[in-house]
Image (cartoon, rainbow, N blue to C red; front, side, top):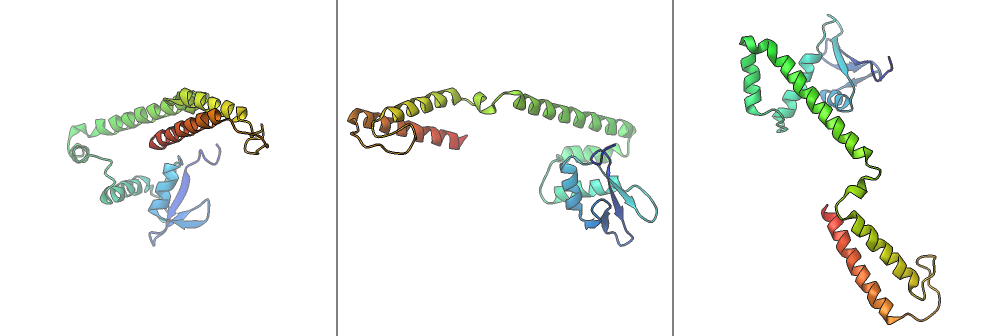
Length: 185
């Protein structure tokens, strides 16, 4: 089993301080929440009794986020959870919640796979092909203007055709409009 597959062992001392056994330093609940968000499994053990306190601390993390206004759990869900502790439904709720979250995780994974399976995600963006064609036209025009060499930006000596200048201004205007559209996306 590799290091990232093993749960990160956190020990709770009698002083209630939490100790990360991998990095040999003390951590906070927010640190633990960060480990979990990063995909790491965490196990919190009471040093003296050996009791597994993971569930208690995870609930505390959720409660703290909820109290700060990060309302992830709707009031109805919280109410139903409390009710489930006093009914026979209690045995069904954990399996239902686990299955629901597994479905959510699977859906997110598939969505990310679909996004990364596109050779270049920009090509799927609406208007990308039109923008590419305008860039090609812009480059052709720039290369055709006397006074500009193939070294983009370095000027040669020579007269500039007024028709090309007008076309260049039009392309600059189109490019500015595209940049505005991209900024909105």
